Amino acid sequence: MINQKSSLHYYSDGDILITVKGITFCLHRNILSLCSKVFQDMFKCAKAITPSKEESSTERKLPEISLDDESSEKFQEVLSYIYPGNYQPITWQNVAGFLKLSDKYMMDSVMEASKVFLQQYFRENPLLTLVLSEQYEFKDLYKESSKLVLDQLPAYQRLTGFKFLSSDSRAALLEKHMEYTNSLGRIDAETFVPRFNHINNHVTRHLKDFKQKLSQVIRHLQVLPNPPPSITYKLLSSLIKENNCGYINIQFHLPQKFKMFFENFEPLDCDNIKDEPDYYIFIELGGRRGDTVFYPLLIILKCCN
Image 1 (cartoon, rainbow, N blue to C red):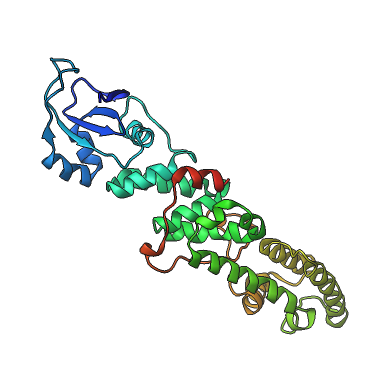
Image 2: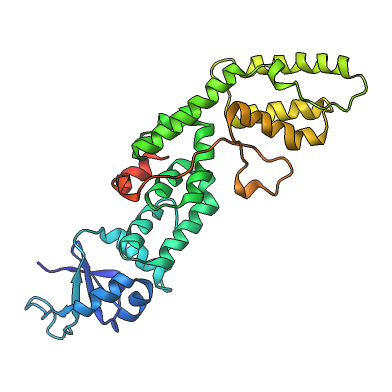
């Protein structure tokens, strides 16, 4: 069987042949060696293949490597990212493939670029970011994307892509969200207010009015389906600000009370510079890498959108 030459990456001055699912790439060992420690070692063992009679008699005898387990399309996309002539940007459609190949062949620069892409755009697809962050142990990204997934967990649970998370991650998300809904059912004005230091001169009247407003907000929050955690935090913090309860209470009292009822809330790291960022519940990555299940990349891409 005659392999087909790559239309994009078959260089006349190449010194190594790599065949992937019937597509042959003529590449440069020095370029791939700089990008991949695995390829650097593989090239030491590569042997020259004599061209068949069907092939051109002038074909050079170049060492050849076969990568039968890879997708020729994904491999070509990664090459287009590495080689300057046919630059292929990282997108949501190829980031999973980039990560898979960069992890397998130890392409540190490609791995880092893929991670940077997720850091910049994770808000567009937090579920896929969470799946990939778990697979490749991006702990900070895992935590950040979990904030957005937890904020709309019922909706994300209905997506097929949710099952591509490990059982541990799915259980942690469900447990965290259940803690939030249970805590929301227990909260009341009497337990939320006691240590509030009001700056209003008419403390007694103000406290009574504030409790009434707080009770109304809490009743609204407890109506099913419960609002997202970020909305709960925003409504309660807005109520405190509107009722002139003092900046010190926003900074210290509210986080303490929320921690008592719901544990920790945090803004997205990228929103920390905002004056009034949204606050979220979250989970953090734990366990071993080997516990993660790897699924076909195309299925993950389709099911996480």
